[in-house]
Length: 605
Image 1 (cartoon, one colour):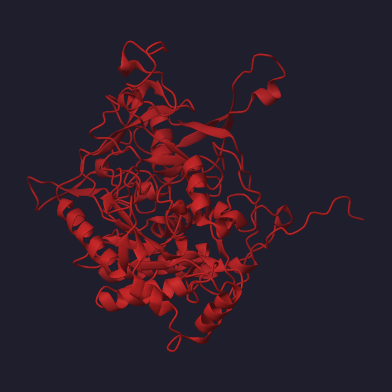
Image 2 (image 1 turned 120 degrees about the vertical axis):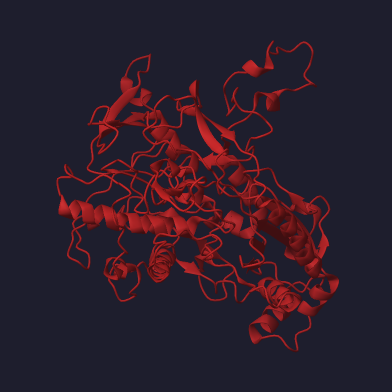
């Protein structure tokens, strides 16, 4: 695996929010997220400073601003996703994600892997989602002994009894019963013990021995090279060209020289996020470059989706707060926590312990209300309450709508203009579609109704739509599909058309024998819920296809290319048994995965 960024955590790809600083003060984590994100495409006009000192240098033509820090001379302001950003480090955005892991709702969000057989499709998703939940360690019970969580949850259940309000499913676990601290799960939970070199050769339940895993940091995957020349079908990737971005460490000369080298493999998986995955494929010449004459992957970067995001913060209603201190009908753990807090801090006007866990409540997507809502107190790149109010009575409301993958909405890459890492500069051409426009408006009204049931708005955080892209749930850039598309002019006919998607539902790129894609960009549908669990599910399905292909052809020289004529197969239940059976030796025990480092011993005898 190559990673263009560095390893920023002691344990590779672990969640930064696990540090005690941020467990104590969630608002401080906002700045960590801000520091991790890099904007994808910034219009030059966004960098114009009219108030600049007249004596200071300024360019004669603002459209020709220096191409640094995401500035893009091709980016228009009116159709940009200005808040779309990426994280470059081992673990990527999983080092600061919210860990929210809902499933997509059938009929509203969930893609159809087997569109001709609803029962088979339902069974496939049930299996994949169960395995994905176990792999990343999803729970809905880690905040059940939080006063604030239960207060918000019960208030909303009473106010909206038909909305299926529930605890937000999260990839995390509490360190101990009654502890104020949780361990947030991240990509390290997927890696698990893969970095333990002492386990090399360890057999799994099927007696297959573990191989070696190499992680190359500060290393750019530049492009893929085919070994089949100009072929447009049955294409085979021969090597991946990569560059050590810190090569000057090894050059030994005053003038550092780029160090390029090749990685040869049987199978290549590009899973670098919804922006960098198509970027690598575009740089390989497969498609996606503006005005490219011939495209091997014509759907690359096209029909992108994102989520209109509405946000506000409230201060809990006085009656709700007063009820927290009325203990007659409260469970014993609640009474003990409030009484202990009052005894320790008799002058505190709030009956809420300082370390009471935050609320984590979800209003899921449902028919008639096709948006996803998170009512919680968590850190994003915005929404820091700061000293304006006691954070114990602040509640964040985030409502996510959906947008369809319209053919006019795309992520295109520029010729002759590169980003700061030397890759083709991405440009967004995106405008909200009319199909779901009314949904966003109804969602805003719904959010205000929910907010009014909880309290009053925090000044400065009244209901508002956030900048497009801020949800950071970009989809569709390397979308999966069936290779078939209904023709508008002859709707009774179906035409095989690989131009409507990048890969099949094995995540194998059309016409390629050994190239796969992964991540949120593979999701082809309009979705409102958080996409991570669905991306994991699709990735697990892809691994089965890769394993089966290499079992049939261990050399990797005669793998079959992806074509629409190939019949997709359900994932065998036995293949994912290690993620379903808690008695399996390889079942991931997230609570025993890793204990915090509490001491350092030097020169131990």
